Image (cartoon, rainbow, N blue to C red):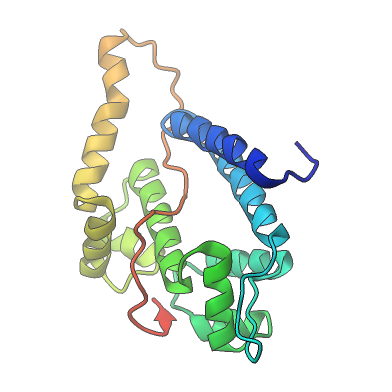
Length: 208
């Protein structure tokens, strides 16, 4: 699937990739990561091939170029444990803050702040399942101000407290060991980083 895809042909392919990734989440995190990455690449490619949306003749705004999107995503992922300011992301690709915010929203259908929060939560889910770190340590590693901030955002987006989410997921992953008489393969369970559909709206100009 190296050739560019057009129009409605992308929809079933992306849907299939995400479905396979969902099924692989609890057993094969690397495979899930590959499926989601491929789906993201297809969506980004489709976005950048679409005609630019209508805009004011005086202030036309287009989505981010592919290299700009990749540079911003790499920057976010490399600095999740620290405050990430919208101004810094814009400066990274030589855009004004206002233009960058509008172009980012056109490309990703969410504000930069919401995207950062979604990736912070994705990393938190990986640490919750793949480590025994305390909530305070996870909050710090994912760039939340403190444990209370982490718990509040996690509950708002995931529907329950992080401690409860960890216990329930681990209980479900341990169930085959009980029912299958030790047939478990021993694979480590991880939650693939992804974007939550209802990411929060920006509350400040800095995504922290």
